[in-house]
Length: 364
Image 1: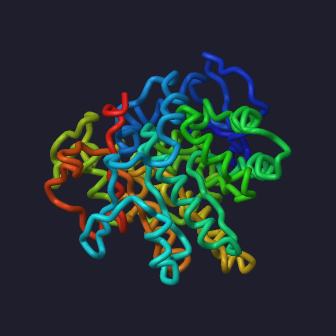
Image 2 (image 1 turned 90 degrees about the horizontal axis):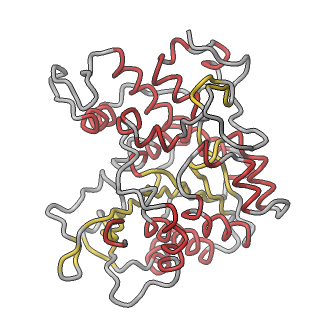
């Protein structure tokens, strides 16, 4: 059995430097040098399909934001494909939302490539547009990037008791998420400046890591009791997971990581991937289900693999609250004559809007 502390890992601490020694972080023993980003980009993280895209050098992050977070330039290669009407639309979420605001679901979910600054600019535009169009409607931003247990720090940040630097320190961003903090700083600063609450959605990474290594069945019973209801029988979700691993449909082939879909290792990793989706969906659903939040809107920001195909976070929110979700999926692609180089347009079951941008490699 995996060894955890006697309570659900809090995943938060007083900050401080990471140690290269093996230590206990958030209640689970793990390598002191292992971060969620490491997991995402390593063999086990690749299983979850979360590390897509070319990572940019850290020193370029601030320069990237200063170049791309401002108003979109005329003629810039960017376009939204609306899968309901099957047409390309200009990347103007303010005008597009205004037309459909009456029928827009309460949950709007955006799936990012973590390392593409254009995706974070799109996310900020979605937030700004909805906030401007509905000034009297409570708006909350749910973020994969923070644990549910980070909520006191997020509340302190929005109420201006701490600043971005302190938020980064208290949430131990470098060890709990690990991607370049500057990529999300404009979104966080907008939320503080406009008193838009931020909701931490994610499960502490050590729990996911423990599940991927040992399986849910081997977690202490007190931890299992605090995990969300999990649907491990969603065929579309399972098939997409197999595809990410390079596994064949007949369950006989060996995928990119040396095992097939009938192996115990596959079962553990699929449990870990599903736990990520279910925990974040439960966090958002709990917020939306409270009577005092019946008129609130939530914008969820999460990795693309949690949103694509709707069977990650979106359908799991819908299962809990009985309402549909509106999904937006930024995608970095090649461009040709100012048009996205797409062979087959995406279907409705992929996302509501596919927001085409340039790839990260094209920005360097």
